[in-house]
Image (cartoon, rainbow, N blue to C red; front, side):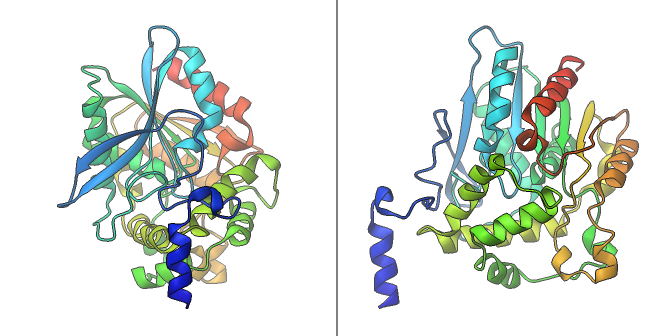
Length: 331
């Protein structure tokens, strides 16, 4: 009976699903801009990579590419899109394979190199010519942006890292390894309450505001929808990627002009739930991690937001956008 009920639920049109419930590719969630699809062949299978590509009302002064974090989507850049467009930038914001409105293949060898190659293929598809882009990466997108900068420095005019994770090697520090099956079991327990609790504790220093609610509901809506297993499996595979592919040891090789934007209240650290109490207390110390990363990346600039956490572009868009636009103008 449970299988039959699940099958019937999967056949229902999206409006018939419960509120804040979305399809496996985030069907039913409005990004506010037209979502385009880039079809690519990767690892012997056709895949769909969703993306936003928005032009300003005048001739663009440059191109900004926005890379989302693991618990985020291209849509999460909503409050940053408007000022970038107003300033004259063309904005491209992809959903990576395995996330949000993009394909979630059951079998895929996730790596930051592969995601960087996918993003590179998208930019080639868009025929930017000799235009070098400003690459902005948040959270996991920061790890991806660093990998992209190492692989394709010729593509980039600047690199902006917004509270990137991966500024410490959790495994080397003693956080226990876990299997993909263990990651998956944990993901299947994910829902709105656990998402809100995690983000409030780790991202926002124990505080919660209405501005965070929309994005927490976006994330939980995929877990509560008919694609729950596909979403959980993709998240498990990408958690394994994040944990086992640190970029911190390669920061000295980044040659692109870089700015780090670090909310000082952030305490994000992958796998901290399995760390010993003593180790857990030391992880995700972004005031320290930001300074260390800025020192490691040649010529990097550090912008610190004293009262902000993991998502300064969501928490205080006005302050973040002003800092980002200032940095872009100097590059």
